[in-house]
Length: 163
Image 1 (cartoon, rainbow, N blue to C red):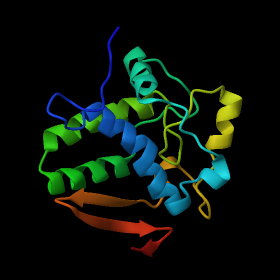
Image 2: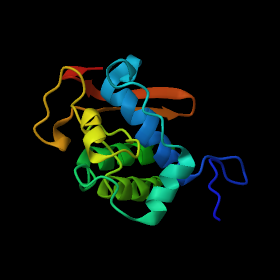
Image 3: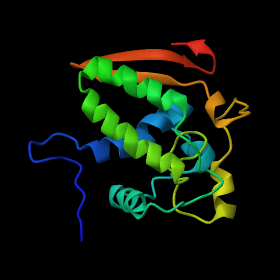
Image 4: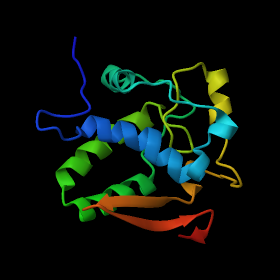
């Protein structure tokens, strides 16, 4: 049985764990801000890192309704991160994992990792973020926070308002 780790032998986050945190913490913050969507949707942290990796490894569509190509904003965020952290290889590997998660229907239209539930139950998690109407999954207005050398950079806007 393969075991997945959040850190490598040198104590650095693994690519797999970076992809998991992007789909759980980062995207949820980008979509919902401070309350993280918990008030509207409850706590969706029901998929552990190991479960996330097993679903990726199984390579089977988890939710056909959510299965779709990687949105362009994820590619843009990854490019920005690579520019600031200088590690394009790490960012590309993380992006490939996220691409697979989107294609397998693991990521909701708000960009957040969805718990493994039935199609009926997943409808509750497919609503657009508060105060937004989404015509397609790529219509969500996103921002990106980048932490580099101890500094936090914020790029973009939330609900059309610049940061």
